[in-house]
Length: 114
Length: 110
Image (cartoon, each protein chain N blue to C red):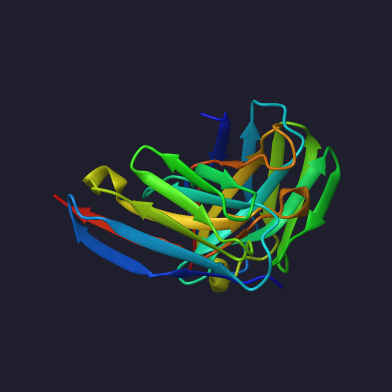
């Protein structure tokens, strides 16, 4: 295992509430990513981080923010959850084997916004 | 924006059959990766291919990369129930910002 833990694994929340998902890695890798996975859309990049306090937007960043205050933790926040943000969220880290290093994924957080 | 199209979307076969799934890109791949995902888990890397025309084998799985680096195929010989899962192709872009296809859901019945 690549040493990635996502919490919580499941969450149900109401529309309009803030939600924070946590990704914790024990590999000391520089790059971390948040993806969402929806039927018919595959995996889409939300935000990524290339170091402590260094983050950038991905393909579907609207309505999401991230923070990385320590190498091992990457937080994803839904500032005001909407039903369209019901999804499975995956955190990933990138290996250190060079430019073709693969992504190693956590086991996901299933978020339902009612 | 790069688009990755995978086909078929769903595939259901009997144990022992052979199958091929495809991945086509709207632009040249930087580096193509195939992942397999099982229910309730994250995707796991199967292979990375970089060079046009490259063929890689992983036990009963054979991966081919097109000469023009815009398409790829995954062939499974004598499929087993343990091969069941979602097969995803991805282009590893700059800073590891991968673009994924929608995947092929494979079911192998015993």
